[in-house]
Every structure is written in structure tokens, then in C-alpha cells.
Length: 310
Ligand SMILES: [Zn+2]
Image (spheres, rainbow, N blue to C red):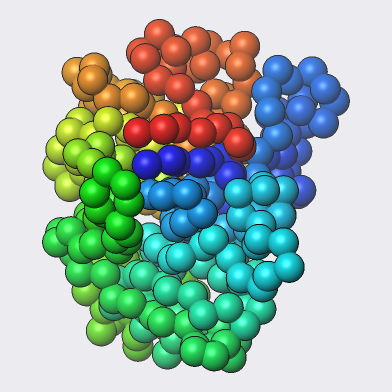
């Protein structure tokens, strides 16, 4: 399984167009040692010329066109993208679908509730249904692995399974109260456990809810690509002077007694990588104390173009 990071920042990217925080300002001045980042996007390939997109970021068109892996073969119309798996109905997870509306019969997986948000309430996404055959919206069960790819190969059958791990998050603000009331909370935000040849990849760019929901998946994986949005719980309040805590908007902070670093302190056999960094996160500055603390704790920070082979 190949895992490719096409984007590694939280919503807004880094630097964010309307943000003058210390990180964004110092980056523009060229005095912050760190990289620019597009909004989080990951792709997984179980076999040559076959890719699954995990979410569909607002930067998807740029991320695909800058990457030769996603180009159609010369003189053909088509795509190596065989499916898209949506992990919530957040704008940052679904907006990129609209970049894929050029009459391509795609398979789009999400929980039943996220599909209802997109199809029943947001008719703009019907633009995807103009292809022949139309896109297939596929409901992902919770906590039950399903096979999403199978192909005969020289050494046997290549098979990729996907399990939706419920994370107890919330539905986005744009969902109407009427629909929200009819949707089960456990289908709002999921993590993904992808398994091929006994290699496990756990992806969760948002970690809301109780630790027990995801800790086993993270510690039992070969590669865990996890929520690196905020360094502290109060980060947004400290920068803006008001607002919500990291936990209130569905992200476990990295630091602190019950932060992500502390939760996975014992997980030594897992490659632990952070993704979805908000522009305020001090870990974007490679010379910061936060960056040093991450490295010392055995964590890496994903960057656009980072790749893994499992
Ligand atoms: Zn900023």
C-alpha cells in the first residue's frame, strides 16, 4: 500500500489568506523556518494506477494536477482514482468533490448520514450525477471492514479493506436542524482503518470524542496519520482573543496531560505522523520548542508530497 500526503494543513491552509497570526506573518516575511501547506488531502494506492482519495479537499484540483500519479494515460479520458472516501460532511472534507464533476463515474463512500447531508440537502453535489453511468454513492457501515478493492496479481489477489471507526464528532453548522435531529451522532465523523497484506494504516485528521474510540486503532497500526490541528486546547482563544477550545471544535490538542502525545506515549511500534496542522500551531515552525518536543517524543509532521510504503 502506498500512502501519499497531497495536503497537510487544516482548513485555510498555511499561510491562511486572511490570517496575520505570528506563524502566518513570519512565514510571509521569510523568517519562519517551515513549509507552506495546502489543505489536508491523503491518497492511498493498493496497486499501480489505482488510487483512493481520503476526503476531497478544497485544494484538490491543484493537488491532483501537480501530481503525475493522477494523470490519465496519454490519449485517453479517465482517471486512476477508483474511489473517494469521505470522513465527515465538513466543508474541508467534501468541497473538493465539486472539482471532480467532469462527467467521471466515480464511487463515493461515506456514512449513510453524511450521504444524506450531501445528497438530500445540498443539491450542488448533484452536479456529480451528470456522468454516465452516474456517480455511485456508497454507504459505509460502522466498525465493519468492507473490501473496497480487489485485483488479481502475479503473487495472488491484491485486496484492500476499509473500516469506518466512529469518533463521536458533530455535524457541521451548515446542516439544518431538522436533518441534524434525524442523524445518529456516531455517523458524523469517522476515522479510517485501511488494511492490505496485514499492513494497517489508520487515518484520523480529526479526533473528537473519547480516546477509547480510536486508541486501539492507532496503537495497532503500522502507520498512524493523526490530528495535529492544535498544540494547545486554548490555541484559537489565545490568538484571536475569543472563540472555542480545540476540544469544542472536535480536535484533541497535542500537548497537555491528556493530549495526543501523552495518549500515545507507549506506542513505539507505530510510525506516528501528524497531519491537518492549523496555521496557528507552533509546530509549523521547525525551530520552535513544540517542534523539538514532537521530535523528542518520536513524532513526525506530514508535509505536502510526503509518501509512505507499507
Ligand atoms: Zn495564521
